[in-house]
Image (cartoon, rainbow, N blue to C red):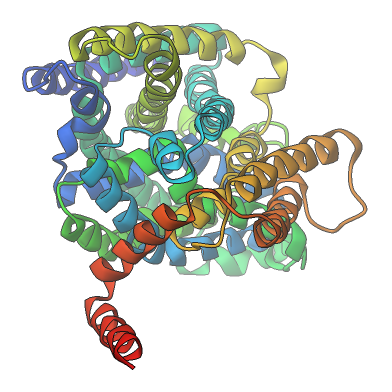
Length: 505
């Protein structure tokens, strides 16, 4: 049986399983925005762990990061350092987002920002930046899966067919089952592509010489074993990935979806091991060992984002087809959540908020499904643009960089009472403007566009906030006071006693 036939059979079986899972999930769906976008805020530990990881680690893990390790060597392994903060960020940001979302029935990040800063414009700004930032992120899922199909079948399944397969199928399952189906499918796909990556890593190590695999690289590619020392370059990737884990709209909404804060606490413990180090170390080993002579036929710098499909196009065709399914699993498990999030921003933050406030939950859910299909079509069209078909890591970094500029304003809501509306808006505008200008004209600074925008935006937020005052300062104080009472009840009691003593004196 030919490689093409095997790949098609495995792909049909895999997509059939996903469709079955989505069908099961759809039977529990309720026609409300909270259920369609957030699975009715009911996700448990295992599903939450897998859906947060699967929605974040995508085709750039199985393709892009491996390609970067091949091109840059051990230097790029520093990107894994951001994985250390996963546990911290899930609890530090996620638990607060969960609490506020549950109390006020928030669906999008914009919901929370408008209520706190009393600004519909800021809500719109968060929605537009979120949607624009998610487009590159969704693009790499579709293009990565299509490139894998093309590489493994020697272009018998061309790129354009892969794009249509990914786009049509994702649009169907997300429309059918919403957030619950996405979370359930993510759980299956997370275990599937995580286990597949582990097996692939072991196969590469064995094929490259076993225990002597990295020793052999000294004579074949000594340059990749040397740290390039480009701190600014790795900081650009690490900062985007670190803060992107919670500021990206689809990740923010994952925290809304948890059943309780204890679920997030358990997720924070498991995530670094399963969803972080496994992905980071597996990509490191595969990318570097691909330099072993004769290991990956036809490999070059240009096609280095397809190392795994190239390897299995010549060896073990059945497993190669499973690998392609794993790549597609990685892509679907990310794009489904990103599509839902994009639709929620468009429907909840724009249509319902400014066009038809009295629309029923059932009607809102229907409009959301139509919006998912529309967003899918837009991403498919973008996937045929040559600029969207570049290396996966830079394209992903663009998405992270755009949304990264929202961080200062969000931190003001979650932690810093002195942050003002003027500071929040100006920080986003300055950060995005700096990012665009540096992408176009370059910069004399050592950092890249995203990090430079983030630094300038943060400085802007601090300075403007110190120079301005909001009209709702009392409400903001109550918001932050509430968080202190929730997280530090003993400290809150001590402050109350102290204030009482001062007043009696």
